[in-house]
Image: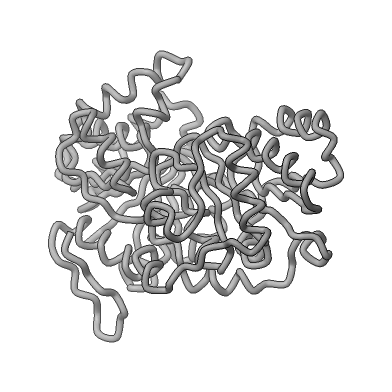
Length: 374
């Protein structure tokens, strides 16, 4: 079966990282997919295995993506196409209609669209939820990365999304977590509070920075935020205004955040909303205690309602600071390995193969997949 993975680019987001994980896992099972990108750019592009074909549609403007993906489907006629994120998903569904091909389309919703586009300033973004309700039911399958995302899709009129947790705990990730190259602060005596993600309003690092300013009034600590984005100037100005410039660092995008996760005293997710935050799962897998906002969607599912990590209200600076201080004082919550198995690569890949092929997937002899009834 010829598989095609379609996405806009290979940026540093969690959705792109999951697609890289899936593509590489397929390749290792001799099910080599073709990766089709609106533009072949982004730091994760180099993480694809070398034998995976990459097609660059060279569509720098969104109006070019649809006709070029339509042309690709007509020429190559893959049996199945997996896309991710709302706008590429809509393009994939329209491209199948325009190409008049029988390609099986599976769309993967990685965020909470009712929130992601609910406050959009552009009219093009504001109509995305309506388009999801109109077009997603035409897909052969719709994958939601959490039950919260599935509920949001159902509110938009999408029937019966299949929930598959992100397969983000991989052998490669665990190996990278032991790499010695980390920020100099991890070699000091003060505990390091860690945040990882794009510097964008959704991640609300401003609340984390304000909470950290309260933490250092009580005890010495350092804050390291790994990621890049449009909010960098705003966050840097906030750090300076709070007088904590010598205790907060924004080193930018780091290809291996996992080594930092293994060494941090606490990992903090401060997001306003999510789909299923990969970094929260990865920090837990690296043995780092976690604190998270109880945002829609994902953290409460990942942490089993707070059993395996601290949950605080979205935007609550005082509650976030208190939770960080509790963990720094030794109040972190341990996570059993059995709980983390649902986020492992082999588990998720087997589920995706079932959905993509439309039938139960049987792993070749010697493989470790454990297919699950969906």
